[in-house]
Image (tube, rainbow, N blue to C red):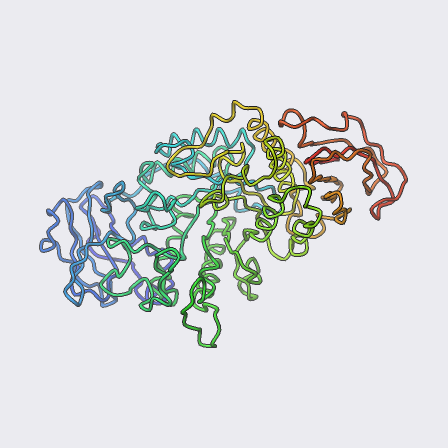
Length: 615
């Protein structure tokens, strides 16, 4: 019977090196009752309250564990499912009613109590997947990610187990390799999409229990689908029951709002220099990977962590008088190092929107240590270009070609994420110029460009079938649009792009290395045409992109070999909703005519607003 904290290393905790603090802090059930423990070093008194004591703080007062700011109490006869909170009396006499920072389950919002959970006895069936993951050369395999908000995917709160079956079936049909979940860590406000998190150890109760979520991950793995979780260590909400001024003081956040508050988001910033706060975050990251078998974390808003002056006029410089957040940088390097040492094969991905150097460089050599970085520059430049009327695109060719100048400076992931289809930005389809036919053709061309450009891929749900409306988390996707040829055509294209991408070493083997890409012609701005090759070992693919609605007949393309080429994909094909301008399935035999600095060449028909993959 465990009635006191045991095997808890208070020295590791005070040094920020207790990476599994969740095993001790929070509420831990055994057959005789529950051991509660909470860090509140500046509290005058702490009690456990719940239905079992009529929420009366006088009944179950806690006591300090060895003067390290942790309070503990064993309460016999409490069972899983009981609701509880911590009642904290601050040094100023305030009475604060707080949810458990380490709570592993919460009430369904708008209620906010923590729930006592039993130790999971879930029987995993994904050992084969986990063993393979450890050995995987992830840099040189295809990775195509389907980003999902679970509640809005079909417009209702469906249990994790049922979601697993429906979502995996669709993801397999579409050919994605991974699912990325917008934060499912518990959060009070639906419209925050999970990015204002209050439960860093709890899958949201909107879709079921923690074991239901384990089933979701397990089912994905059994079907060879990886799962990435959006994780938010950059900020947290001010809700009174959460982490804000947890024991009556700025415990998890900075006291000074110039360091401790995000004005844009009305949230609070973690104090990364405080060891116990680092424990909380390190432990959370490891919790999802080790206890739930998550395959990777996408770390939200990294840029906001790196800069002390991020989106603020008043700020406090670091000790050297500059704007870099040295404590956050140290935290990130330690985080990425710990995760990769403890869990080989699990990925950690940065959403980082600036030109900070070596985001994916090794931490021991001055980098931040992430495995991948979202390529926000590529995304912004590409969408800017695609929004321009094709008649004017010849003046903006550099918006497309610039990305290759830095494409291999980091391990980049190409994202068309939820952020691009909200807050008045419209849908991916409505960003495209022209009449209806041109908008769909432009979108098919855009996706073809994305899947042939170096970098791993990410598409947000609904973009794969050209959702017309801007995304709204309160309603489901417009699945009914698939009855229309144009929308079904875009979906068919994405399905085929995923298939070709995964079957073609030339497209995935060297996504982070220069040797996998070569410009054949990037200077035909007058016709808004780009020609490049992707290659790996013995395979070479030729990519031809026509960004105008004018077909280009007898267009000569330089090729590296005296060989015969054929269309592998034509984004203008009728099956995709296109006009079916093509090369008539004819074999394109190379001639010994020099072109584009190549000894040989072929002539092709470039479809309007179309992409060709030739091989």
